[in-house]
Amino acid sequence: MKNIEIALKKLLLKILLLFSSSKKSKNTPLRKGEKVLFIRLNKIGDALVTTPLLKLFKEKLNLEIHILADIKNHFVFNDGSIYKNVVIFKKGIGGFLSVRRYIKENNITTVFDLHDDVSATVSFLLALSNAGNIIGYKKGNEELYTELVDKPDSSKFHVIDRYLSFADHFGVNYDKSEINVNYKINEVSLKFVEYYFNEKLDKNKKIIGINISAGSDARFWGLDHFQRLTKDVNSESIQLVILASPSDREKVGAIAVNDYPIFTNKDFNVFSAFISKLD
Image 1 (cartoon, rainbow, N blue to C red):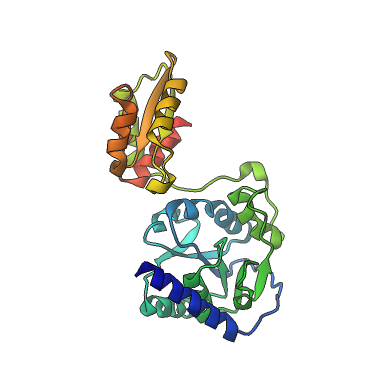
Image 2 (cartoon, rainbow, N blue to C red):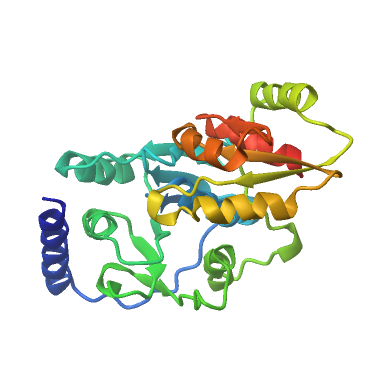
């Protein structure tokens, strides 16, 4: 059933592109205070790597930034000083029409597609969009955009640097040394992690965390690899901690074998607080 759905989406996309009129690049400058919608669906990591660009646009151009996000990643955009509003995309024709209505009611003038590859879902959103400017990478669905940005080679540029090409395209100046992922960690999570560090870990040692969770079994490195890594890293001067999502608890047990502390938590904010503490 899933394969049929994918095939149908691809067919509909081809039809959509066939009947879309090709739009030449306007090269329209972004105006300070402009109302802009950024589309970034999919998972947590996909959202996190866009935050440096969004923060930069806010600081340099004071854009009114609206985000169309996924149920899986919307909580990443939690800095109220940057984002005017975060909308969770709902699948189905109602979801597409809702986005179109949102753009109109909020006087959104420009839409950014922050996806590296062609997405049928995003392409439909762009086709239905009533915004004057639609901006994205050159990647195979150019007919949907009013302005195109050259896509940097993924084999040569880090994903964050690739997103910064949008800033370069619009002549936004920045100090690369000040570019960082932006995510606000709440005080409750920080205090919880502080307690864990004080009670469970030896602060006289260098604390190193090894995260075994990769989002899917297909991306899991393997028990043997992690077992060898922990043995190679561990020493008397190091406090090793195994990090994982709760769903990987069984794997953690096979790796740690009661030799190392284990930190699991389903709350992304708590997990982020732990990582920040390691810094």
